[in-house]
Length: 120
Ligand SMILES: [Zn+2]
Image (cartoon, rainbow, N blue to C red; front, side, top):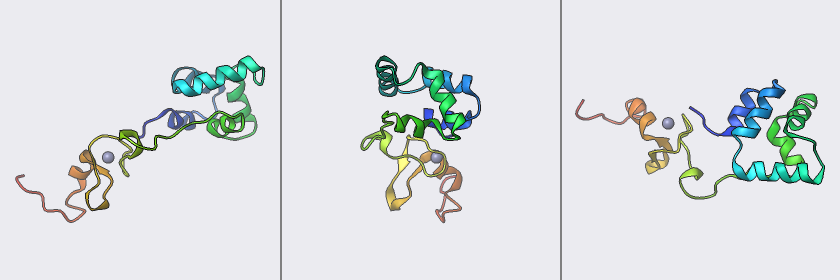
């Protein structure tokens, strides 16, 4: 299952109320802080306005936020930097042989990848 608030935002792209709620509740703290700064500086009135701009201009919320100068940072190192190529999970990633697949997906597909499953 894909994770992350940017995925949620993409899923609800045509509902301004829901989008505003996701930004308010699911956005990471550094994004919320930057939005609060924008409101303080008077560039936008409220969170709802971001959702309305996105729908009016037919863009996704992330790129609207980028244009307003809000960064949605990606992890460059650590557990958050690599994810499963199939399900997007950050847990139990197998990097051996350049697989980049999580342990769960690997177990389900090992026979397809040509691995011999022992003890089953
Ligand atoms: Zn996986």
